[in-house]
Length: 399
Image (cartoon, rainbow, N blue to C red; front, side, top):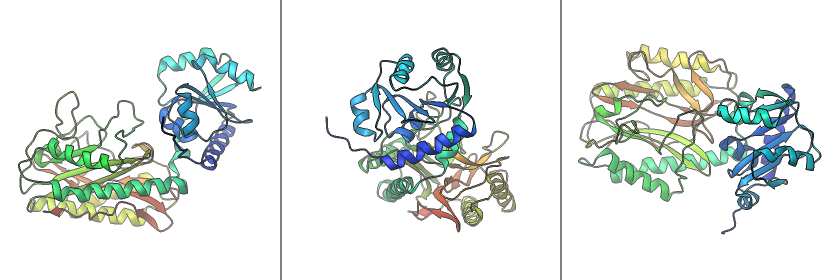
């Protein structure tokens, strides 16, 4: 097998585990078992199947079911142990001189019920508490290492948008154009998988939508849905033929070395309906306002309300982030290793922003029977407001 270098430095992992231990101490948790794939990668540097056991004292133990050889190549952790199953954890703890936990922290937001019951039997006598919120808050603030990864991903997202003019042509179907763009993204190193934490959340690269079909809603927690190629998927590019004078939504996530950049641009072959043009300009003004106000300490729910108010002031309140009772009640989301990280710019949210949080801000307008316009960029929270990582021109790109 080709040698695999550790892509997450040991110092980076140590800082993350130290932050987890501090959270555990606040909750009087003496043992944490990390099992969810993205959290496992975040704290261990590998996504091989297994469990990471973290205790207040002593080294973290990475227990790997498959494949331990790869885990030892990918992870910079010192203690990596091969196990045939989770039931071996008590034996391994005993071998390392560790007592069974009295209070065990788990990721209860994503843990299946049957595994929860199994862990309760394995760690008999331990009280089980939820560590998921603390883990997500730790992951929300990005380290310099992570910001470098996100910048590289954002550069690739811009390249994908820059490829559209060479490929877009009237008469192509949405899915044909999507395939060409996704192939190009893959050639840049796109990992293919876009991870989401939400149960039932799934995405393949993103959405390429055109004309009226772009305004067709779907089950996905997104202002856009699209028809898709079948009801089995029910989202994304479909078989519609792209025409002239309509808004073409290129809403893609670039995933490079685990880290995601979310990016939406509008293209058109000829000028779009003036209503769509005005609505798009309104989303750019909303984005500009948020880039100024989203400083450390700003409250996420307040930012959401300001965005909604600006859409209403522009005359597009009924079209902002969807139409009707089921419109999306968020206007931005944290992003990193997953597409739906903290913080959420959403109705009623009380979380305050911190420096080095990364947000995908996505003010969009939905017009049933006509189309979708708007913008999405990936930004870093700084003392001066939002620093935008995705910089491809975000007006309507008329070809």
